Each structure stands twice: as C-alpha cells, then as structure tokens.
Amino acid sequence: MPIRPTLRARYPANWSEISARVRFARAGGLCQHCKRPHFATIRCLPDGRWFDPASRTWRNGRGRNARWPDLIDATRMRMTRVVLAAAHLDHDPANNRLRNLRAMCQRCHMLHDRPHHVLQRWITYRARYAMGDLFLGEYVNAVSR
Image (tube, one colour):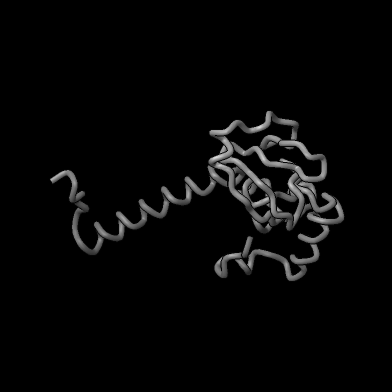
C-alpha cells in the first residue's frame, strides 16, 4: 500500500528494504494470514474464499482448504491481483521491529486495519462538525428538519 505523504516522515529511510525483507525473505512471497501468493491473479469470492492454482483447490480467508463454490457462488466470482504489503500489527508506522511487521495481501491488510480506520473516520467526522460549529454555527442535519 502506498504511504500517505503526511505519514512519510514516520517511516525510516530504508523502509523499502525492511518491507522487502518481511514480504519476501521471511514470508516467502505469501500472505502470512491467508497464504495468497504475491502478484498472482486469482479467482476469489466475497466471503474470502480463493482458488489456489498451485494445489488446485479452494482456500478460505485463513489459507485452509474450503468447500468448492456452488453455481450461485460462481456468479459472484471475480479476478484480483494480489499485492503484498508489510503491515504494522500495532498500527504505528514508527514501530518497525520485525516482530511487529507481517506480510499481508491487500484484503487481509484492510481487514486488520478496519477498527483503526473506523476510529479515524469517526475522529474526522467529529472534527468536521466541530469546525462547522466554530465557524458556521451549530450543525443542523438537513434530513431532520
């Protein structure tokens, strides 16, 4: 995942080497959560199941064998390109200890970061309301009128 310019200063100068070490040297190019291979185009379903072409079987969101999709599931199938990223387990980009970093595909990374993103979204909304109250008067929801 690209680094936001506002957070760039919190990452070390050698972040690309650290990230490559976590993703390829340690994890072997596989997501450490669901075992999806880096830069492979795979078939996946909304519930997290994906087709592993190496073993010719379906796997669940944890990388374990899963049931094959039925006809209804097959209509929801899509192709996606897997890209690994080095994820911070504690959500702190300044903490770059190897035990705090995991190689995760974009799906697993977003699921891991979801509580953090929900909190940040709540803070952003509250800040917008506060700025509106400060400069424009009390916020009135147009729907409640």
